[in-house]
Image (cartoon, rainbow, N blue to C red; front, side):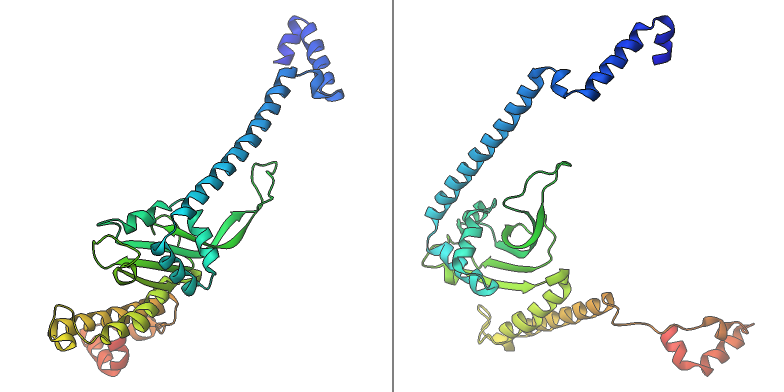
Length: 286
């Protein structure tokens, strides 16, 4: 393109060369309009002011939520602190700064949420004093974090603490300990099957079998339906255990060189003879 215009008139190349020299040999302020730098400066200032305003609003929201903390919240906080080995102050701070704080109120309400889930695991978090890099990224690191979740959007790699409602009654400070059950299972490093297996076999099944009565079922543990249910749970745990061991390659099938057994087989009688000669292999590989 430059050559094309040079043939028609040499002044374009001269002007282009002069502009290139000006940009290379002097500051950008000499060739770019001052309004551009003014706009950039205003944008930086506005961004800084916006961050301050957002921080101010977040602080106000946090204090408003802290004022809402009552006996119901304190019950949840104390259970979480005991189970996850955090202080109650740390748990409270995590809850009131959580974006999903409203889930707690939905859980407490009449016919509210049936479950309330918390994950405690490593999360990539931005450093408090991190500055923006030239590529737009920020310095960040993995840190343990307790947060509310619906259980369907975040990968589960740590500990899950959960609260379950036992009825549709409104949860109050006086009935929270009777109406809400607490439990947790550990899936560190994403070992969900192992965590669920441990939870069921070491906690839930012993708890169920220790019940002295079956609620509405008068016979309690002697009732055939309850016995069938407990048997089904036991079988489910066995299946979990087998699945986990398969995934972890703890069960390995012996490799068999099939050619040794079938290369000389020519007709049906040869197959029958081979089956009688090697019954052990036939049963395991048939």
